[in-house]
Image (cartoon, rainbow, N blue to C red; front, side, top):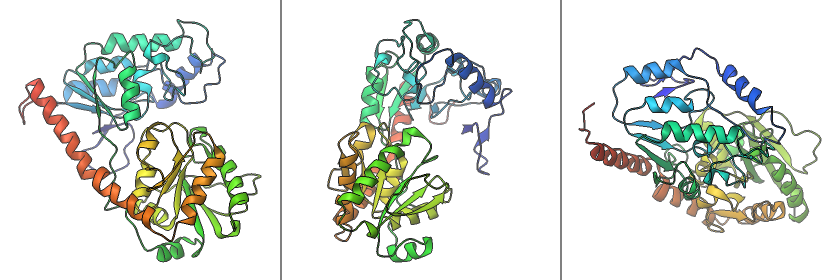
Length: 387
């Protein structure tokens, strides 16, 4: 495994040292993108500058198949993919691989026809930078042996409709969860350990930069929580726990006690928070396959989210959670109330845990990848141990 940032002592994982730091790649992207005056609410990557360190490793290493995951922030520029001479499997973390540079296209579908006049850039020029980027992808990737893996059927459909991937083999393999790590624990014990109310209805929300990243939808959650305080028969019996952000919520009276857990890297502790909660809420609008939802469900905690994109495929409405009408904060509040009112009945919790074990456990998903690797190797005429 080749990575940009190594966080483990595992000898099979290698950090790729780049001549140009990530800040230089981002600075160039911003310099070009700042010529446009559009809202650009989400992350963009243009993939122009080279990565000599990765190019050299690809030249020196022996391999049969390359799997790509998230390759941006200067790690794998657009042009570098053509240095890979063997079959490629690309597991899509977001939409960037088939757009003109945006990672989240929102309601725009111009990636189906070649981008240009990008609404996120506020551009009326059909030959703008989004068209340039997608044309570079077409030029450098057109002869690559590439299979696309989508972790949601929504992402698979989006990729299959795109100009870049409509002729590619697009395979659906869901995100897996380790059901031995994320599992139900004794609520009374974990709440006492974490300082959460023993008899309260606990709502859990979490993400990296949970309060500051607009993609995570915390502004929707705030409005929904205010509505919940109005419709809940006893708002004082509700608590909110937040992980992924340590700061307090500024200038907001939620009527609820709020616990901030900060960033949690210890999966055992993270599982304690999932297990302590009565409901996990994901208020973001456009998600591909959110790990937090799978982890919460695996811990036996029902989840509430908007009925949109890939998230809707992992939650069964009123079976193991609640799917709210997209962008309706009132309905998001209804979903929270629905799960809180049924926290003692256990059928939501049991259904959530059962589904993760049967359909999304990590071993089952790993076997799907193994079968894909073997199929591609056979088609490419590779021996099991050949190079």
